[in-house]
Image (tube, rainbow, N blue to C red; front, side, top):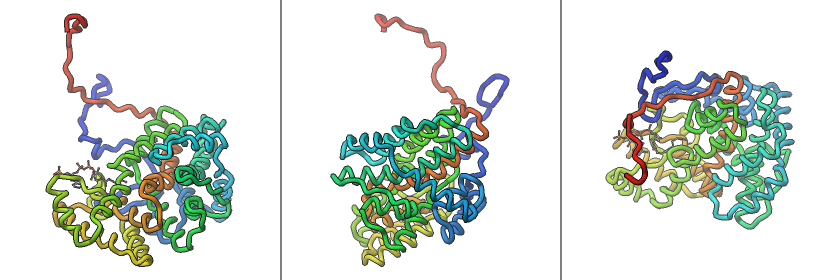
Length: 381
Ligand code: ACO
């Protein structure tokens, strides 16, 4: 930027590709070597050893918690799960046919009405809001799922972690230990991903010193798009359409011939395998084998080989997650809301960071329209 004249000094690639738009210590993506870190810790170590709650603490505080700190965060999350009665009532009036991401976006925006501290952007105030949002997003998603099916919501259980509680609130049954752990790792894997489209959105909104509910509402809208978090649902729809592994090749060749984007492939940053997909592939296979339903992973693996051979494209995080959730019995249109249930930790981490060292985010556009156009009165047009 030529500051003196206030004009853009350098033109950027379409879609801000390659632009570094913020300094952050929350997470980093090394797209060449396929490495993802949260606050310096490798995603593989976290997936192996950590829990979602511990990851939330890490993203907000920049280090792993001690035992008392982790217990403290768990207790605060459990104490903040209940939705305000007004929001539960409002949700009863949502159309049963609403998109779950739209329901989530609307409910999160409404939550601000009933939080007297929503405008407190101090570190302590913003942390309180972050805790409420992280505790309540799973309850909102599960409540909507129950209500749209004509069922009463299942009360959240303060003794369960976020992963088990969410699955329990969906079905009314506590998940097996293994399924709960797989789901917990899925939440860890989706928690943060640097300046992805929804996180960037949340930082732009927070950068105006708007409240955290507003920033998260905008982030949910950004995540819902099929080029971002919406891809996981579309991958499962694709698998259902293909149906059998033998049909995968013909389906893909036709899709590529008609220049369709194949959901779950490609990434703005990764030019190699997304490290998260290593875990999600494993879970998809394990759950498929446990249920005697391996055709989804077989189709996925066939498509993966073909896409690499044809387009040199790798699967992204959305490629395997859908089939894993499907095998857990979760409805397709909840896959993206589940992404939000996890990513709330990264969004709020970034919003906390933005508030702590804020400068309004206001880039320039390169004007390519005409200038000096005369105003013609309406009668003469
Ligand atoms: N299927 C087929 N071709 C693809 C795909 C795909 N999934 N992804 C990229 N390509 C091709 C493009 O057609 C383009 O080819 P060209 O240069 O011959 O025109 C080239 O690869 C570059 O693709 P762009 O769309 O320009 O890459 P961009 O960085 O803008 O987009 C994106 C990245 C949006 C993820 C893209 O790969 C895509 O649309 N993928 C499918 C949707 C998806 O899976 N989204 C989830 C992403 S992960 C996440 O947000 C959680």
